Amino acid sequence: MALNADVLRAYVGYLRDLGVHDLYRRGDPQAGPVEFAEESVAPQTSLPQTSQPQAVAAAQPVAVVERVVEQVSAMSMPIQPLPTPGFLEAPVGRLVSFNDLAPLPAAPVPVEQRAAALRAIQEEIGDCTRCPLAYLGRRSIVFADGDPGARLMFVGEGPGADEDASGIPFVGKAGQLLNNMIQAMGLQREAVYIANIVKCRPPQNRVPEPLEANTCDPFLLRQIDIVQPQVIVALGATAATYLLGVKQSLTSLRGRWHSCRGAKLAVTYHPAFLLRDPRQKGEAWKDLQMVMAELGLQAPARKPAQ
Image (cartoon, rainbow, N blue to C red; front, side, top):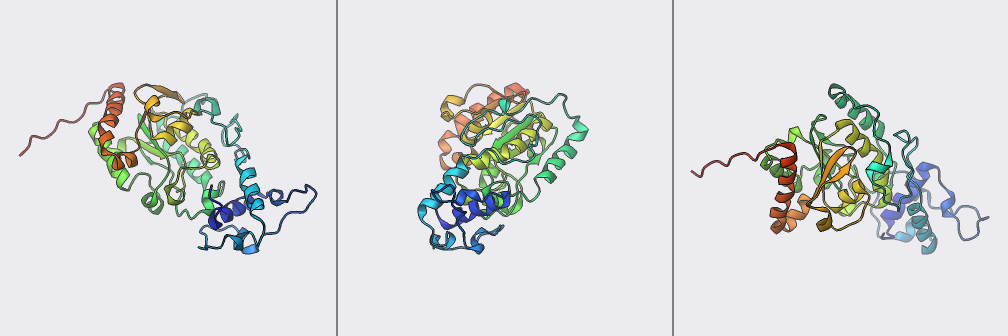
């Protein structure tokens, strides 16, 4: 992780909100906490731009900064209270599949109650400050989009700039391609459910840190349990990694069924990757055809050329 001013400022504000202060101590365990400049630790929703990292740490040595980041990375998921009874408190650096994070619900949520149940989760998330992404310039919490009773659910990595501005997942160029993929399957976007591993945009669209993804996991897990899709499609390696709890190549995960919260899970390329490498669209279509066969879908007939 780059130790620049914005990253440090985000972590310091995040920890201060949690009431954690003793991570700033120097090597002597009896020493008091290192004092940071007040303007660099006050919680903020957007961070002032600065090219002077030393202004953040008030002339403290880089070793102190590194120690803060190292110890934050070793913390357990800071979800209080745990949003699901029996939810496993897994260390941030440990991958745990969604199947093992919590027991399956004792009873399904009735279809007519699913929209209200999802709204309750969204209200619980609120103006979330549970992880450092809240302090790294995010504008919107991007919850989800689509039908609460959908048989098919797509899970991506995280919001981009367009999604951060609108509060809706997959509305940029990658979203337009996803819409085309859904229509090619014989469905409309309104008939599926779409969410991401993290609900806040990582800066510069970087891959979410484990702390960030694991903090969002409980909410996504509950969304899956409420919607109860028959099939989940993991869009890209990040989604597959956290849903399945394994870090493997996309090639090794594609082309076969996995299990996630009682649903069958297929892995395919993220639409953003397909925009960068259109040659892989044919491979992604093979993955979607596997999903279509499972759901009994047929691609719409092409209109004859005029």
